Amino acid sequence: MKNLFWIICLFLLPFQACCDKSEEHPEEGSVTRYGSVIRVKPEKLAEYKALHANPWPGVNKMIRECNIRNYSIYYRDGYLFSYFEYTGTDLEADMQKMAADSLTREWWKLTDPCQYPVESAGEGVWWADMEEVYHLD
Image (cartoon, rainbow, N blue to C red; front, side, top):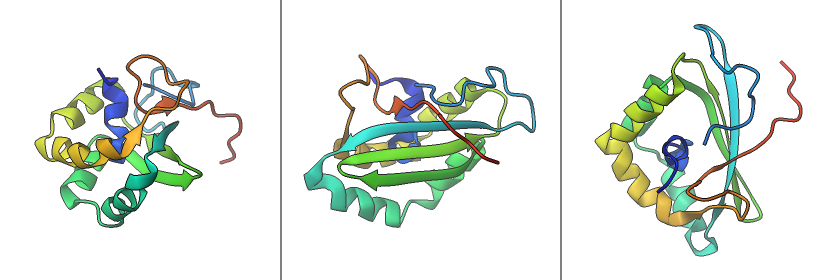
């Protein structure tokens, strides 16, 4: 079964906790950065890009409601790289909220078949976490 947190990263978002572990318990007003990686099926790349060129407004709204800001997905050589900033105080609850949203689940039915985990992702991990090695505010 896919890890609930990274199921979110299907558009997500972007959707396994990753990256900046400097704040294990974020406080209100704080930002925690997350980065992750997944593979994209070559035959599905154009479809994936087309979906994200015109994302559903309701999916974007849910991402924002779940305290995700500055969300981006990049592509390079068969890999998708995700980055976002989490501004809430309960990531697990926000990810559960997103996973429960019927419109988001419909979106994932379109995006998930375009992707597959990287080899080092681990059992049940969809989007694999990346280690932050440098950040400049």
